[in-house]
Image (cartoon, rainbow, N blue to C red; front, side, top):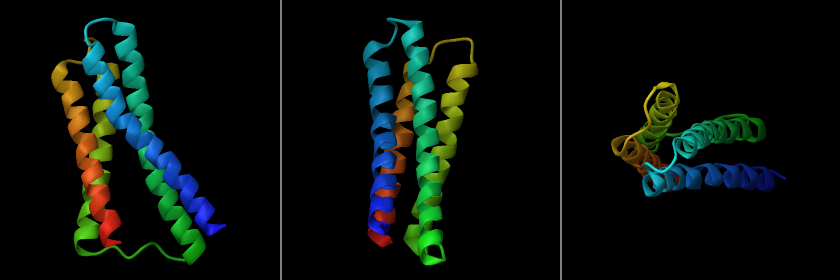
Length: 131
């Protein structure tokens, strides 16, 4: 049962991760064609960052629920977790800003979104390696 819960959380977390790269890539490919499409992509990006945050919280909740404690993260793992959380907060904020502004997101906005996703992925790899 424990493995199934972790696998389901990981599957949802991975879906969010793929979306974090796919949305900005699609937005860059279709940039300038349709403001409505770019707005939908911004909403999708916001949901993907939210899914990442929820997935991280679900991992913590499952660990606490099944083991009675959170995983012991120290050193590189703790730093990677901090980077991952920071990237998620900034990414969520950037996606929110894209929706609140009166102008369409520019190339720099979408590239920044991809960079944040890459940062979060790199931190996730380090976190997985050291935990």
